[in-house]
Amino acid sequence: MRNRSQKGFAHLVLLLLIIAVAVGAVLLVAKHHSQQPKTSKAQTPQSISSQWSNGQCQGKGTVPLTNSPISLNQLDSIAPMGNMVGDHVTPSDHLGFASVNPAQDTPIYAVAKGYVVQIEYTQEPQKSWYGLLIEHSCTFYSRQFLLSDLAEPFKSALGNHHSANVRMPVAAGQLIGSLRDHGLDYWLADLDSELAFINPDRYANEAWKIHIVDPFNFYAEPLKSQLLAKDLREATPRGGSINYDAPGSLAGNWFKAGSQLTQDAQKDAINNLTFGYDFLDPRLIRISLGDYQGKASQFNAADNGPDPQTVKVGQLVKYGLVGSDYRLPNGQRWDRMHAAAGVTGFVNDQLSGTMMVQLVSDRQLKLETFPGQTPASLNDFTSAARIYER
Image (cartoon, rainbow, N blue to C red; front, side, top):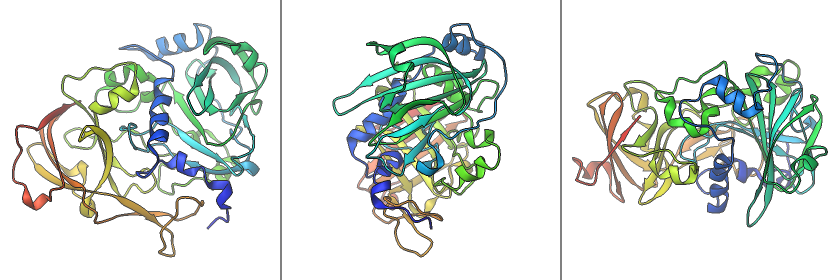
């Protein structure tokens, strides 16, 4: 187990946001996505790049990542992609980097050379933060956001505006800003790569999502191993997963039939549904529903089954909806406040209700929830059942 102080890791709750996190933090995460670069339906990689870089991008292909966004001696931990919590119904597309001293300013650096092409500023009742989109080539982009402050010359380029399209060279390891009182969110997109979502058009307002890649794969040794040593996830892929779509099964993302995308991720959340897996311990089944008694909620499957990938067309299944927790290798519960190696998950027996679901076809399912009821007490759907599609 790595020896870390409670003070240095207290903000990890904001990064993990696992079930018991405050509602305010949950809404913040959902809002992050609504603030990300916007695209329109049927965007191609070329049109995405043209929009992001204003048609001025240079080069193609990936580049090596040579720097951690937080220096190793100030980096406490890395939370993987794939968290599902609150209005963040589908798996999150970014890593979370935590500082050992969150109460102090932590310098943030560019992970590779390129051009800063977009700068954004978001003001909220309790805090404000900045985001930078960096072009490393016409097909390779990174985004670092939740920065507490920007370094020059980027802050001057933004001025008093909330967003700015710019073209400013940045060197690998160059100081781009600082962080305080929370973690840094970071994603990497390779426009030459595409995740196998069953219906990519569902992500038109978040077009980068289908091109998200695991940043660990682009670091060379010894930095790669040094970063992996800070990773809270020990399963592969180490950076986590955001796509569980499996044709002909329940696994993956679903959307209420007839629902339409908006420019507001928080409003879209109520229409979303995911049958996936825990982002720290993917052995645990995770069910994320945007409309459970009118609000977004996440559960684990009682007895951890059946596995969504094994549920086929026509099969009626009932999931007992329970919570989960994490253990340390010595069997004690992880307090979620101290970094630790070897954390594993387990489901509990605190039943919230039951979800009845049937895959009607490859692209459509029928679902109904029964709060407070056990699977054994239920036999069939009622008129309140809803249809989801993808």
